[in-house]
Length: 322
Ligand SMILES: Nc1ncnc2c1ncn2[C@@H]1O[C@H](COP(=O)(O)OP(=O)(O)O)[C@@H](O)[C@H]1O
Ligand SMILES: [Mg+2]
Image (cartoon, rainbow, N blue to C red; front, side, top):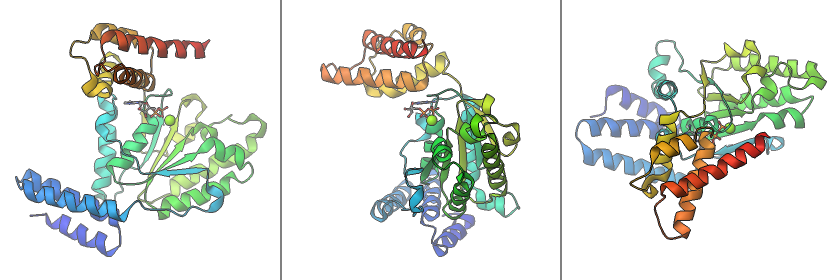
């Protein structure tokens, strides 16, 4: 049987018309039943939830018209198992998910779940992907705010736009990703209008401080140096992303190639050839070689094919650097 807490939450979420929460608790009940060995029941509950989700469709949010093009909304479909990151980052993400799922328990003790996260690291290491994973795992929509556009397009009224966005964060629970965040978080980002950027940064700091919604706020940036120190303490978590190490590169290749993986890959070579590449570049090389395997009707990616694809990426990468 479901626990008393689960029953109460189910009723609460139904009465407050919170369909996503209702589904999420129903799935927790299914997991609970599965652990008790009630596999058929768990299976039935999951089916009911899946069907309801499909027929009810995605939640549509009404953004003010002038925000179109600034905020991109989607319902991502990437599970946490696809993310190849360090154990530490994995645990941090796990904790965010866990606290979100247990938010009612925390609330009843006057605590709130951790939900303001700053992701820092080089391009292509999984920052945007992490926001997608969080949205997927928490059954929330992902709303991506293009911060650089917000700043350039609405020069002079960026703060009022930010206020609108934070109103949404308050009213529509979701994962909100401020991408290219250094455009506002930077102390010197737009040197031609330092005053305006200061104001924008200050309003952001205020908004994020005051925000007591259930939404998850993720800010991502490639350039930590540009970030204002006052920002860091506003976040519950500051997470550093890095280029993949040997083990991570191997795991990534194995993950992406999946069934296309040739049983006898020379890992040593693959690991050393991919040394300077980011996750995104390795991911791309793997996909290129899968396509090639399909088009040449081999259906397996062998060492030579993968090394070629990696070299090609490395060439593109080095060309860019020069
Ligand atoms: N840590 C990772 N694990 C698995 N795949 C990754 C990872 N980082 C990047 N990728 C792949 O590269 C793509 C682009 O990465 P992204 O998350 O947009 O990078 P960032 O936001 O850090 O620049 C992802 O959609 C995914 O396919
Ligand atoms: Mg990104």
